[in-house]
Image 1 (cartoon, rainbow, N blue to C red):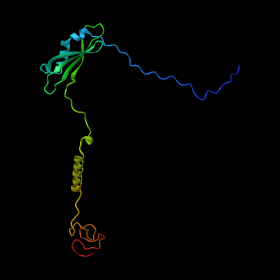
Image 2 (cartoon, one colour; image 1 turned 180 degrees about the horizontal axis):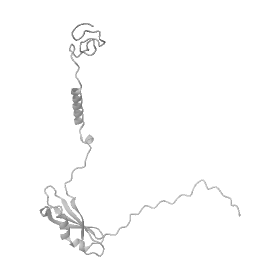
Image 3 (spheres, rainbow, N blue to C red; image 1 turned 60 degrees about the vertical axis):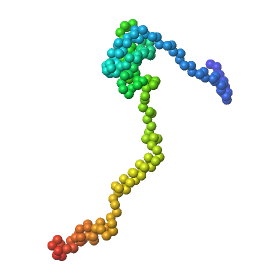
Length: 182
């Protein structure tokens, strides 16, 4: 065997090549499935499981999500739901000729009226309202606290007996209940 001499590594390591920016994965557009797109009757029947036929409007469009998966959108005719759409997602297995309803529901459209984002109470209450609430709390606390008794009332100091009964000391040296001393 031969002995090899180990040399110390240089103080500075060689600079690493710059990292390549991550490329977004190229994704092909999903294939339009003519069978699923044409099956409006199955999609409408799926929506009619959760909505009355009179609540489903005449507007209809189809959105292709994936290969063999489409979403049928029907206009919502419910009062107060302007811009909302009933939807039914349809899918089919490869080489199958039968569409299956996967999910049905109600989705907001682009011009739908939506509730505003939730804002915590502390951020939506004005400083005046906060001050008023603190004042009301202080008033409630003051009303709940026991009032100080007026001077000269029976609630001042207990009598010499200590129990407020006026019967004298409890060691048996005071008057008996019949008024005689022992």
